Amino acid sequence: MSLTMYQASIPAFVRMLGNLSAILDKAAAHAEAKKIAPAIFINARLAPDMFPLSRQVQIATDIVKGCAARLAGIEVPSYEDNEATFEELQARVAKTIAFLQSIRAEQIDGSEERDITVKFGSREFNFLGQAYLVDFVIPNFHFHLTSTYAILRHNGVDIGKMDYIGSF
Image (cartoon, rainbow, N blue to C red; front, side):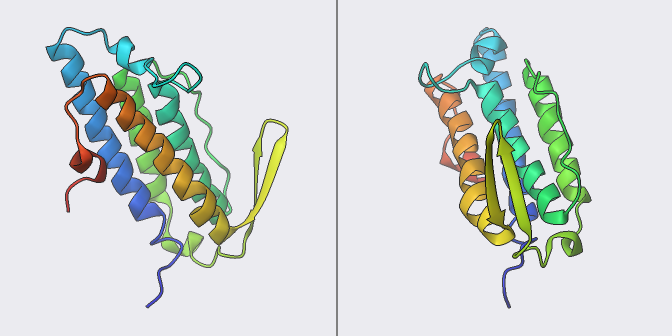
């Protein structure tokens, strides 16, 4: 049996966003226990030229909601990108999970050869569906999830590999 486009995307995205939510919960609890202003974590970055944690979460959710919508041939939901608290980031993650769960397998399966165009400012990228998912979305999604994890770990939040990959 072959792995379908749906199986390779939506369940994995939902699972990893659940892990992200748990990591954000641990970060919020850590901030409260150590009496650290949550904004310290929300605005933290590993290097001066990288995006802060809040933007890492925004991009991770944007990548997967955009992927699901484009593969399904529906409009990509738009979010404001104004989250400044753990609660707001959690709401964004939950909203993204709910959107992903609204997508049915039959909307995505068969999208391997669908033409996908993604615009970033003045740049435009063209893919076929499978290459878009496997070569662009999955690596980008994990990059921003990993960056979020690394920012929090670097700032003392007690998380480890199992928090990132979750339980089985």
